[in-house]
Length: 207
Image (cartoon, rainbow, N blue to C red):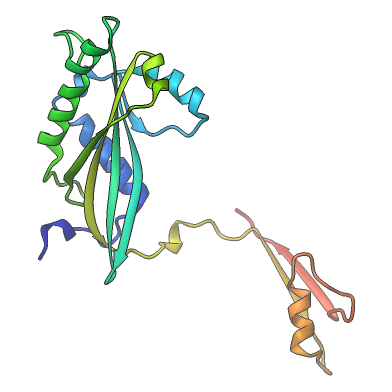
């Protein structure tokens, strides 16, 4: 069996994201970081300010994926944020007190390449350095480590979904209307221009 497919039957994107966050927290550099978390969802300018306040930090975000033969090849990015009051060179190399981007990169690759979490086995594939001027303007040095894993496709676990709150039924008594009329009734909003159900019932279920 391919080791990358171990324990993957129920692995979902959200679970893999949490597993990677925990993996970074278990790495040797965790004590040197101010934050390890899922990538925040906000406006770019707000995110950059947050990154500047929290660096050095690592953020996890799902990337592209491919699907074939009931398997999914998934890619996650670990966005590494570094800064240093001594400037960009110190942010890249570190200064003995604050970890640098190169140190973050090397340590995470060494720890995570071939690392197994509960739901997947991870392999480092590439590392990209951010070039946008907006990063440098905030004194940030940024790079992204791409990790890849292959998992078996997992269907939705319906037991984790909330039961519906409202159930609506239309009843059609004999002689029945044509099916085309029934289709009109279930539209949103319902179309009652040419016919109407003999009885409707709406039930609200407890949560």
